Image 1: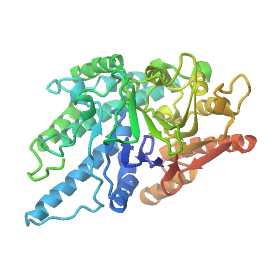
Image 2: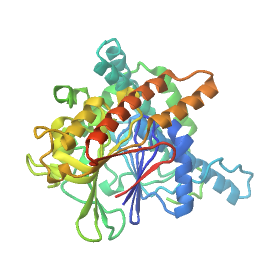
Image 3: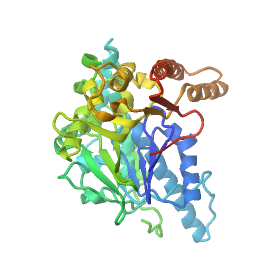
Length: 449
């Protein structure tokens, strides 16, 4: 199995290749997608001849879904070009490589949660405005999270429109009978006949989606953001008809506060991937979206991978919610250990949180009180980042050259990442070779599991 960590700004974007199966896990932010991920995927498709067997959208936050929407828009541009070219019409080839074909999408779409005919509003934006008056840093970060949700809902609706049968015709949640993707029994899913990779949904549960449904309905019932509504309705009207015919292809008290996690994050679609190893045994990868540690543990327990009160060691753990302090606590870090921890974050919103890193390091390098009881806890491990101070400084230099002044936001990200790298460098030096660190500096990072 190979995992490529792609730039995604404050979001997630991973390409997972396991034998004949290829999965894109989220798409990151629009800027990182168009500047780097777009070109990477185009070259990957051209060089390998592979399709994306699955595009998996963990939830609707912009830093997860926006890049996927751009991937779909790029696919539309190429299909329109192909159609015109095949029919002898003048056509300009898109200024980027052809994206890989998408065989299926898993995404708990907005339209599956609520009736799209209801008026669109923004209770999340209102909640963000209320929280913004606070002086509490955690509440301010929560306000930003709600604002991000409010901004991403139109993008989620657009994704649903693009993949519809009369446009790109990409199957949605086909393995779930085109219904919501959630924990249903203890089934395992294979994307190819006789495939070696088994996928188990470890979240969300039905109760999480019911809570989210109520909040979506509140969102729809509120009409405060009329301007945004008008823009979305205009987009939907412009894209209402089908694409031209002929496109048949288809730290302890401070950490883990569940009440400080938004409802969409709590309803993240989370997956356990299991691949048989040639010499016996199983490679396990846990993809967590922005989910909460309690829900990850519940899902793994449901599928019999985690005994009551026991622990589990996996090959790869994608750390939930970019290492936010609200989604992970010491208990989780001690129960779930990994050979490789993947952290998708660029320092924005102070992610990954320094306290989370401290707890993570304690679970592998700490005192007897804090180290995980898992037998593998004292073995070597690697922490991977899809960002670095070097990478951010290159972005800052480019921004300064273009705008004539540095970006305040990037300056804050650089300060956070500089502190992170120093903390981890100190931990590495004290680890006697047990801790390794991998940072994305120029090219995407590749992890061979």
